[in-house]
Length: 211
Image (cartoon, rainbow, N blue to C red; front, side, top):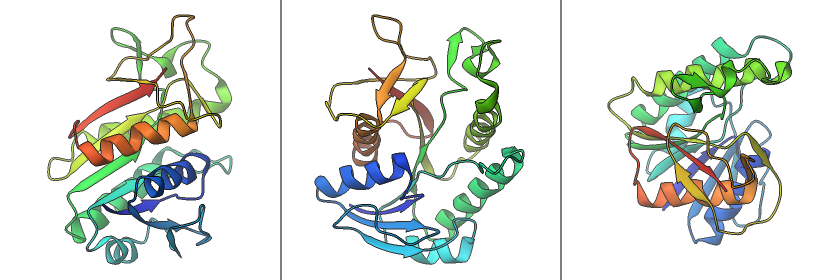
């Protein structure tokens, strides 16, 4: 596949790039710096909010992958992150690319019927804004009916680690292992993400990946 990857230099984005390249896909990495996160990719500098620029980059590709994250400058990230994702969707439409796979958040996952992780009283205060921003974006994607999008939520904990290739795919519920831990390595999350890029098995819905 020919894939444009937005937010390619972050923890998750760089691992998605590595996973896709290892599987033989052609990856164009887009970031503010324009740095190549891994060998074997094309890279370019662009602001993901620049709809005409992103549309031009995406034209002729099979899919767009977004590993963008909310602003982390201390301001409320909700409206800026929503606006950024709206701009990306507009760019994908303009480029006439139908497939869009998005790195999501865990906060909107359900821990009980009708109860999201982000709404629990012990949810970390320093992560609240980012979690709510991701939840807003998921709600937006659920209104997008003309693109084949998939929103991929990680579990409660995601960090650099080992690629095992062993993980589970779920839906709107928070997945936990036998010991009650909700976690995955960034490498295995990237494997799950690229699996979905390749298979298009879950269109216009949210999935989650965890051990």
